[in-house]
Length: 169
Image (cartoon, rainbow, N blue to C red; front, side):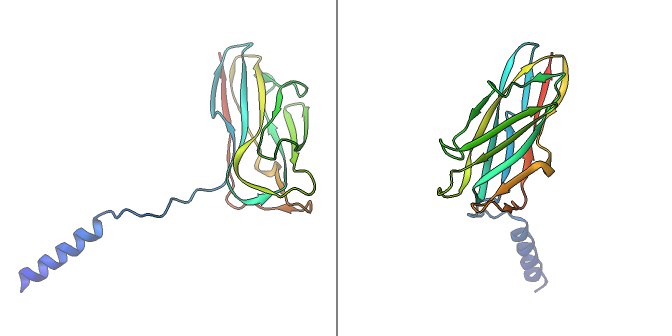
């Protein structure tokens, strides 16, 4: 009897330690990111950085945000270093303003269009290497605002923010 009890306990312990494969997908948080995450340049070289939204399950009508960078490392020209992405549609309303070490961006669907969700490129920004060093192109969390079709701010819970590290040699 002791051996049967011992065998049952061992079987229970072994079955509890075995990994079971789940058919449920791993949940991932919505992300706003600057891609690629790591850039290496030499002085005078230009790189394209994509502003990307991923896994956004809540529909949004618009977004405004600020991107910060180090002007001693890279330069941005708002008149020529900006390409609108497809996330908000081909006719999206966009505003881009560079001031000091920040780029202010606003994107919106056209009134009457449905809000959007999912994944896609919001825009592409080009930066030209100015001086040697290392720094980040980043989005401050407090400077990201999403809006619904009524113009009211909406919250995106568990939003992950990814920056770009830039190294200039």
